[in-house]
Every structure is written in structure tokens, then in C-alpha cells.
Length: 181
Image 1: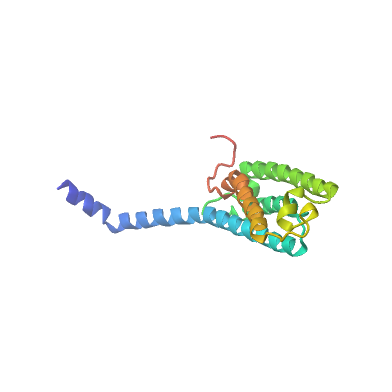
Image 2: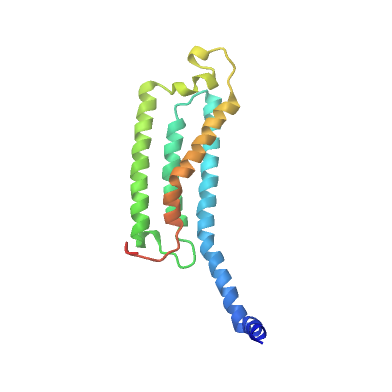
């Protein structure tokens, strides 16, 4: 008899409506995270592929590190904008956790970008890529485009991995405007 009562209670139209609302709420709240992570992955791999194409055609590696740094800053901007799109999410400007995380991430990655751009300029390139591009002491040897692309793909994975904590915070739909637990 208890099973029959439980079955009837769970199949009541009000109970079904609550379950549907609950499922829809979870889907909407997950939408923000999926949107942020998906856009971050697409942006990162797209940007790194464009960088590879340009670098390979120009036979240079001088902007390899610059593309990495710009990629970090672009992900911070995109996640700050897209992270506020979920159901019940706080706008980026109203969430101190998102502000602090994004600003610190942007400062640390911006500093890295400036340093790596300066280093590439001072050294007139990056000798790590001489062999795969057939430059300097490897002049006359054929370029290795797939190996060169592997460097760019590794950078894409690294950018995503390092960005994950910031992406997680910015895609959060938890509405806690303060720093308290």
C-alpha cells in the first residue's frame, strides 16, 4: 500500500510540474557553465590555430608567446561577460569573487604577456622553434608543420588548464554577493 501511495504522490500533476521545474532550473544553471567552457575552448583552439597558420606562413615564432598571453586576457573578458547569463546568476560587477578572481588573473597574465613579448623582442625570436621551422643552424632542412602545430596545440591546452579556476568562478551561478561562506 505504501508503494501505491508513493507512486500516486509522485505522479500527481503538481509533483510532475515541480520535477520539470527542477530539471529546467538545473539545465538553465548548467547552461552558463557550458556556454563559458565551450566558448573558452573554441576561442582558445581557434586563436591558437590562427596563430599557427600565420606563424607558419611567415616562418616565425616571434608572436607565439604573445598569442598565449592575449588568449588568457580574452578568456578573462569572455568569461566575465558570458558568466552572468545563467538563471539567477549575479552580474559580474555585483559579485566580488568574480571581480577579484578576474582582475588578479588579468594582472598576472598581463604581466606574463608583457614579459614574454619583451623577451621575444630582445632575443630576436625563440630558438626552441629553429628546428621545426628550419631556421638558423637548421637552415636547409625541411620545416615540420605538424610538429610546429603541436607546440601551438600544447599552448592551447595549457591556456585552458591555467584558466580553469577563473572560468569556474566566472561561470558560477551561486548567488553569494559577499565573501562569506
